[in-house]
Length: 482
Ligand SMILES: Cc1ncc(COP(=O)(O)O)c(C=O)c1O
Image (cartoon, rainbow, N blue to C red):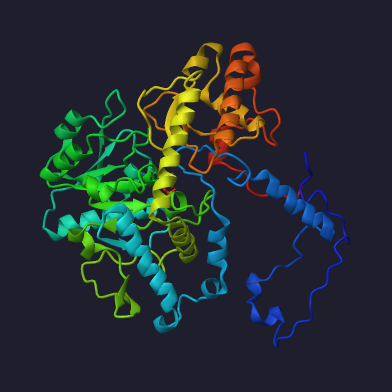
């Protein structure tokens, strides 16, 4: 185990010098109020330059990312982020902008925003887009506020409930709740799709709408989507599309064509901008024309050859983000869309679906696959075949760490017992998928012949098993001097 940087401290080993101060009035004791001044020197570790470099290099090897290897985290679309996106976002003309600059000096940025709004509308089949929300869940909140504003504008105040399928991502019921709706759970049928009878029985004039993702969180396409849309619309509700799974249909079909009224997309998943560990992201929201007036303001509009922010939107739900969203993320996603083009986006989707079905078929030889349907970009397997040996999904996930993989999403969706949700994405080659299959087969064999090897995994990780609840609820995030 490597030492912490504090444990490497050697007094006097850091002989760095700071450049001379070249601004006047630099005596901080006169410019900072005394109650904010430290009474004694802070206990920073002193190490030589090479030790500092080694420390950060070692830390960087502990973080697993898509650039390290296959990252089959279902629902999260951990695809490779082409480096050209980073190059574009770092161009000085973008990176050096200040959000308070006059609009006439940032015409290029406004044009990029505008074109992004138009491209996302085309890709999803919606009429207007806002780029403001900073994450998928943030987009959900903006989208559901828009639905609420629509109903209230029509003086339809009875609609106090939101339907959410039992397979939904946790952010969907959380969003509906935060926006003030009572959540009504819609059951899935044994095939893993929305149970139409249950949906019909729950639709009423008290329901504002249905939040759905298609493909759903089992990776399955809701083949009755037109009927689902008809049930919700005929009952006066609206259909919300959680676009975190757009990867599985992009370029092939569109939520707007399936009857959805509001959509959010996760730029940081489908459109390949890096994510994980809390951001940064972007969750633009698109709507059909009857809801456009309620979008957050400002939108970017074009007037002749010029672009500007339009605040003249009296029915808008207001601003949901300072300035106009996470600009760098939008530049990266814009670059991705432009570099792939329409045909490339479709191909990316087809490869994502092909890769997922390939893995589903191969892993189905040793692992239980509850829904025996062709999947879209992800699928759910379980550890049922390993249960007799006392091996659980968590054990398999931990053992994968020993083999150098990030584990898949586990215990989600909640409707599948001991779920392992696997999403390979389109950016993995056949060879890398085969490597993963071999590893999963090896673990299945271990589970059969030497179950303790799996049950006690990981053996080679920096940290072995932790009490997951305590680790999540009471994390120790800082080092305390003894
Ligand atoms: C289906 C689905 N919906 C919504 C979200 C929320 O997106 P974000 O993490 O950007 O808030 C996710 C994220 O994993 C998701 O998979």
